[in-house]
View 1 (tube, rainbow, N blue to C red):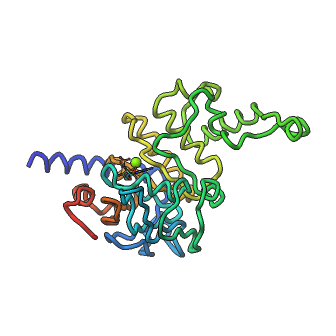
View 2: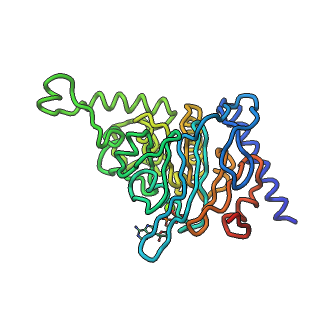
View 3: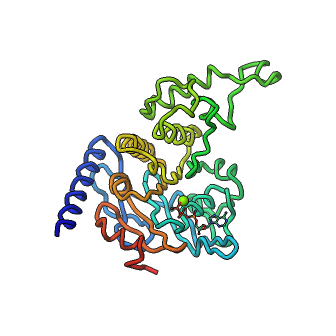
Amino acid sequence: MVNGLVAALVDGLVAALREARRARGARRICRTGEPAEPASPSTTREGEVPVTGPPLLALRGISKRFGAVQALMDVELEIHSGEVVALLGDNGAGKSTLVKVISGVVPADKGVIEWEGRTVQVRSPQDAQRLGIATVHQNLALCDNLDVAENLFLGRERRRPGLLGSLCRLVDGSGMRREARRQLDELGIRIPDVRVPVAVLSAGQRQSVAISRAHLGEPRAVLLDEPTAALGVQQTSHVLDLVDKLRERGVGVLLISHNMGDVKAVADRAAVLRLGRNNGFFDVPTTSHDQIISSITGATSSA
Ligand SMILES: Nc1ncnc2c1ncn2[C@@H]1O[C@H](COP(=O)(O)OP(=O)(O)OP(=O)(O)O)[C@@H](O)[C@H]1O
Ligand SMILES: [Mg+2]
């Protein structure tokens, strides 16, 4: 009884936060609503963008085995532009493996990746980048000894204009710092100085730098593997604001999280993996916390 009351209060609070986010202008897509159904067009609510045409990204029957471990089995997933899809599941459910398959880090054994309705080969992170897929992996992959601007441009450093850049291959440090500042300001990320090494930043700031780095190439899809796992309340809120901003810009976001509060606050739909298989798709705003948790724990199954 008391638990039920607390759960209802939490749901109410999350709904209020969600509404506040929406009131700040987040554009939302129409949602499909039904568990275990792929996304399809539905009625348009005020301020929402109708889903038409093929999904931005679709996975069809993806399987991946590591030795004796079947990490993924016939996994299906769709993400539309301007949509935040939460990918949920217990530890070891296969979430990070799926992200690695989409981002070209590990090859799938079986299955197809579609991009705007066309089958594509994603054999390397460069293939994913060329398509417009950016990933923030669970371990962030930032270089502690480099500063914020250097981390943002890692692997795509800008050269100085003219012969200095083309012949001497000199890096345009001030240009990158200016662009880093502009990018952080645009995303509302509060880091006073882009010349500080990321080692001295807080966990939330580091996460923001990693997301900002993913955003720098103007991606069409962003995959975030547990971006709020190590963060406090305020830092989590900043990261969720960033997710909202990506959606507003029409980016399709895949958000992995164990935190139902995060999911309720920003996700349009949720896909649950259990033991490497799909175990349900949910329309987040109209689905209760408990229904999604039951799917994660296996108390309910759509298999
Ligand atoms: N490179 C690998 N070699 C062998 N097994 C692996 C490898 N990568 C993942 N696995 C296994 O695949 C399964 C899925 O792992 P994965 O990291 O995708 O889970 P996850 O859902 O991201 O879990 P978590 O919530 O703990 O991050 C696990 O059993 C894991 O041990
Ligand atoms: Mg993981």
